[in-house]
Length: 153
Image (cartoon, rainbow, N blue to C red; front, side):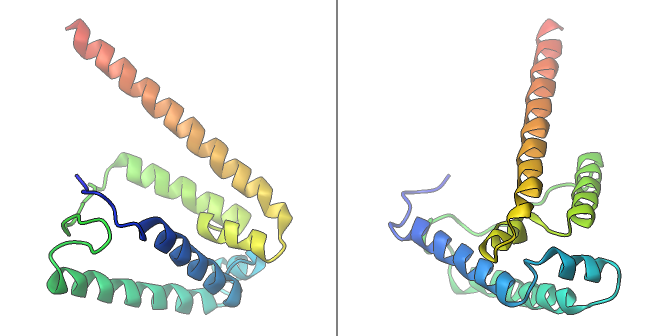
């Protein structure tokens, strides 16, 4: 479990999100038509944006555990948290992909899209919140049912 967080933890999270949003806006990835053009194989700019982010992330994930044994702001140890590839991952990824294809925007870019004046994206954001709520509701009721069935044995 984490120790007491560094006082700069939350402000740095905000700054990181701000940099992410500005980057999405600057690269035009906060515009659904650009994302849809990528998904229709007409514009490959998104591939370079995602590739650049993957390279930076990969370097950070490879180097940080070698430079420090704990995360600087949380004090947590570095470690891999692997999630098994199961039916839920496949179904969730499929639903996410369909939503991304229909709306032309992923969750992070949806918020950045508001910053560039796309207020119609509020429909997609509302859909994301409703979908997350429904999934959480379904999961908690399923867990309650499994607990009740196990307790009845």
